[in-house]
Length: 258
Image (cartoon, rainbow, N blue to C red; front, side):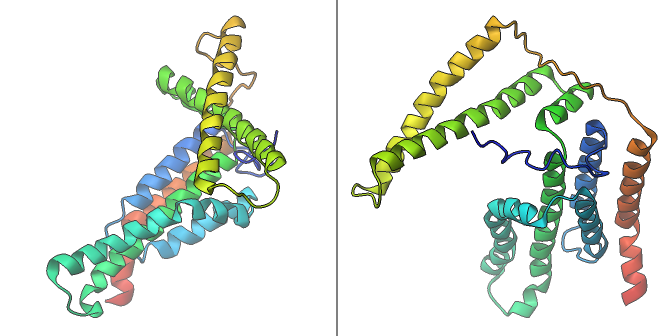
């Protein structure tokens, strides 16, 4: 069972990894809210945001190849969202020239920068901490119990589904070596149905075994969270820095270019 695709780099030793999960979660959410709240079409502040996010990624020691691969998964949705705004303006206002839509293209570019900045921060959050520790930290922050249980079960069942995918791939390749003679849609459709049926059956067995061992909706953990000075000082300084950029970037831009 090869299940290192979700938290492959969570065991690294870096300043970001050593932070308390509660602090990391709050810091990531604060940075995302501040960056995304920038006005539409504002590009100048990202001259500060992007280097700061890159520095955090470098300190975390997460390989950039891994971050880029994760970003590529959602890139089509980000690029389409950024393209549709200027395109919709062209269709509603009538096409004139590309220069007449410079503001609309700047808005599209700001959408791309905001989305990738927030996405990289989320990737760093989930890659520098075990997912169950993040859920435990959220429970300490008074996240509703039901949401925590559902999230924890979904996280565990992902491994089960992935294991069934590996099993059915091995079975298909052993029975159908070489190129497929049947329609690929039919073969992969039958495999997807088989994955669903087998995963559903195993999930019932797994949940029944959890109940027989006394599962009551809480996932016990041996980890004890304790806040240290660095857990508050460094993230607090980063949030303050980003907030300062957010509040003063417009004045700096006007001073430099006006």
